[in-house]
Amino acid sequence: MDLTASGRGITTSVASPATSLRAWLPASILLAATMTWAVGATWDIQWHSDVGPDTFFTLPHLFIYASAAMSGFTSLAVILATTAAGRAGRTMDATLGGPGIGVFGRTFTAPLGYLVTSLGAASFLLYGLWDLWWHSLYGFDAIIDSPPHIGLFLSSTVTSVGTVIVFAAAREQRWGQLGALVCLGNLLISSTITALAVQRLSGGTIRWTVVVTAFMALILLITGGSLRKGGATITALVAAAMQGVFWWFAPWAARAYADFVELPMREHIRGIPATPALIPLCLIPVGIVVDLVLRRSGHTVRLLPALAGAIGGAIVALCAPWQNILIYGGSLPVTATIIGTTVFGAIFGGLAGFLGWRFGDMLHLAAPTTGARA
Image 1: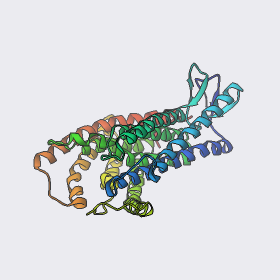
Image 2: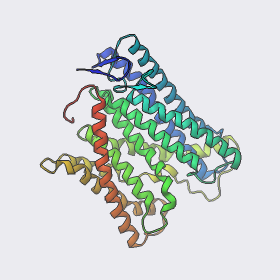
Image 3: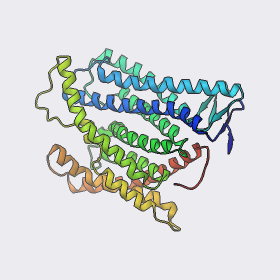
Image 4: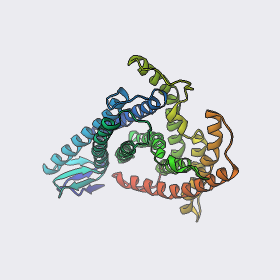
């Protein structure tokens, strides 16, 4: 099956093993970049929690900005190579990031996935400059959810979404399908950081951080379920494995770096890993429930993603108070808060199920061939 991209007459086709290898190489660099971001962001947030003094030029920041550079330069190289191939009339591998998109009046031809990652990397650079200015004015950050940080989180999310598209474009290959699920799990981890943007809204009877976390997690779990049978469980397993690694890494890295730069740790720290503690501990059971619901058939099949999301959102929201007690101690919030958060978790989870299934449809369209869900 041949597809004509929207660039300068460039044609894409199903890849041979040789061209699949070439498509796999830049995709693997993007995956490494997203993992580098996850390490840097987790480390940086733990540093804010356990040490405090912070400048723009720290080792965790180096990881964060290196990830953007890796994504940006890799995407630029692929876009330039695709453009040159199109102008020369050569057939391009359709698994290389999806269909070509004409940019700047078709001056450039950018595979969809690499176009998205390049936009995320470019906006990351702009927010990084804002963060540099912010540090020059205020020194270290007293809070993690500063305006430039929220912009950085959103930019990294865009880059990660592009990486998912890049792998999903090769979903007919085993490395593409598994890579997409791994990237979804990594994006799930990062989404809990982005949810911090609404933490100051959680002073009433609704814990909006929990609701938004459930919403973003369910979008990604159901997207994984739309890609293949058991996809939601695989996505949850990847996220849970990363959560386990970061649970050990984050406190250790903060203390080791503080010792290296000869800064004292905060008094009375408990060594609780800041970012891993934000991630729901019930991801694997939720992933299993989602996959079980999505496997049902019948006239209600179109409602199943929303139903799976609603059930999953309710589970995440209901388990959140007990997770906080397990990690931080204390007591349960009032019943109205638990009920209200659970209800809104289910409502937003249902919306996440609808959007996640549609995102999965988009990922299917990014592949060079179509067919029934695996």
